[in-house]
Image 1 (cartoon, rainbow, N blue to C red):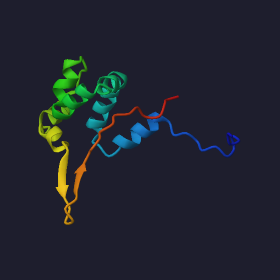
Image 2: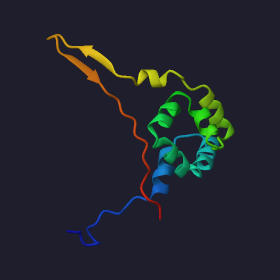
Image 3: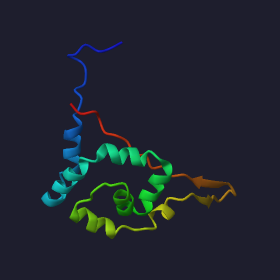
Length: 118
């Protein structure tokens, strides 16, 4: 049962959410993030493939450029300094508890589309 319009929560627009998420960045990085956002649909499609998402975690710049996504200069510099061992850090690790039980941590990274615009 739907709520009457007067009681329904207002939906936050995707553009407002994006603006809020980059608000803490420098103005130049904000401009570059806006420029990269043009490719959002292509990037999300790319990251929906688990193998390509794994490549992205180990080398995001090469992955984006290999798929024809132009990365702005400042972001390119930051991505060149990216830790290539990040994917290794996300691998499963097993921990032994004092009672002899073992626990395996499993980290999942999901790339999702934000709220629909407009």
